[in-house]
Image (cartoon, rainbow, N blue to C red; front, top):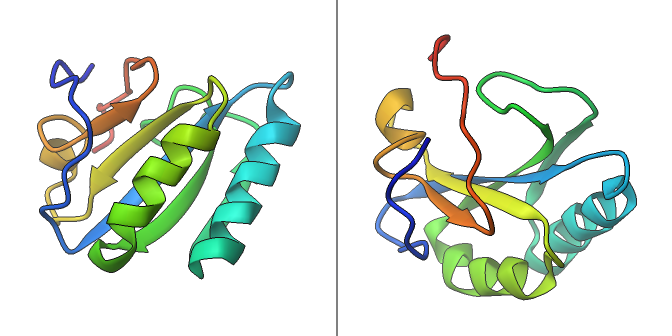
Length: 116
């Protein structure tokens, strides 16, 4: 789990935001992801209704770059309505990206880092 509970800082070139949800919040997560894609011109991944990779919950991935960071992160935080959003950079070091360099909007959850 990430013990670095701090607000995301724009210090890398590219990022992923993973919106976590469950069956009760699927509709809101889908709407939030699609709105982010349209508003910010971002690539939105599939809506995974099962844990994928290190993510222990259902999730949707948003790919973005430093140019979108300063507008997207506050927007996600304001519109997530209780959903957890995991934000991490893409530096090429998956372990550091998902631990030391990672940020949480909302409650953090323990990731499955075994396969990284």
